[in-house]
Structures are given as C-alpha cells and as structure tokens.
Length: 164
Ligand code: COD
Image (cartoon, rainbow, N blue to C red):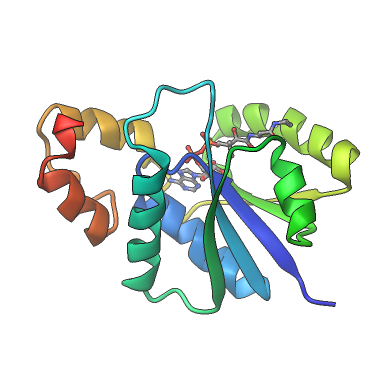
C-alpha cells in the first residue's frame, strides 16, 4: 500500500519556497508527483514546457531524494490526475491566511469529487515570503532573483527570459 502524493502548482517560475515544500513532501511519501497545472486565473510568464524543464533541473541539482516525478496537466480536474496515478493526497504550502482562504474550498471540493485529501505544510520561515509573482516582478524590472529561486531558474532568468 504505497503512499503517493501530488504537489500541484503553477511554478511560474519555480521558487525556493516550492522546492522547500517538495523536499519535505518527498520525505513524507513513497512517491511524489510534482504537477505543473495551468491556472486559468493567472497570466503566465513561462510556457508549461519551460516550467517543467526548470523544475526537473532544479530538483536534480538539489539535495531532494526519493521517487519524484515531474509532469504537467491540462486535461481537466486536478483530482483526475491524482486518481490516474493512484495518489490519495494533494500537498500544498500555506504561507498566510490568504492561502488558507484560497485553498480551503478547493480542498473540500476535491475531497468530495474524488476522496482525495489535501495536506498543508507550513513553509520554512526563510522562504515563507517568496512567491512566483514576486519573482516575476523582480525579473521583469531587471533585479537579481538569485536569492529567491533555485540556481537553474536564476541562470535561465539571467540569460534572457525577460524577452519572452
Ligand atoms: N512557501 C511555501 N509554499 C509555497 C510558497 C512558499 N514560499 N510559494 C508557493 N507555495 C505553495 C503554494 O501555496 C501552492 O500550494 C504551491 O506552492 C504552488 O504555488 P503556485 O503559486 O505555483 O501555484 P498556484 O497557487 O497558482 O496553484 C495552482 C493550482 C492549479 C495548483 C491551483 O489553482 C489548484 O489546485 N487548482 C485546482 C484545479 C481544479 O482541479 N479545480 C477544480 C476543483 S477546485
């Protein structure tokens, strides 16, 4: 009875906050699916394929161990992917009351839709204030994003993602 979890997100781009959640979730479950999901509510900076490749590189270059699969999903409900891969749990990071308010209804709906539980991890205080939207803003204004993102993402944004 293996324990499989999905860590969904926009990852536009992946940040050190994301990596912290992935690292800790990987230590809790036998297999982790890090899933890039298109969020129709947000205007994207990077194409899905680019986010996938940055996530793969970032995880590979990190100290994250275990069975971690990186995939994307745009075919419908998030819980359909979870059901497909036999995952019973979604793992999400909670930075603030704003995240609680946003995530709570989705967690309840997802449990009703597919009996998939949502587990919330509190962030490492060192990364709690980091968000993809902050990184997008700093990058678009020409600032140094290295303190907030994995090295692979910093390298990528340094070499011209601002032109995308
Ligand atoms: N520290 C800790 N956690 C963090 C940090 C940080 N610094 N930064 C981000 N996180 C967490 C977020 O709270 C989130 O859990 C995850 O990392 C991903 O964050 P983002 O910003 O990349 O992704 P979001 O918030 O845009 O999430 C996109 C989803 C598509 C996953 C989300 O909208 C969702 O679950 N949608 C459900 C789609 C669906 O099936 N709907 C129907 C039923 S509700």
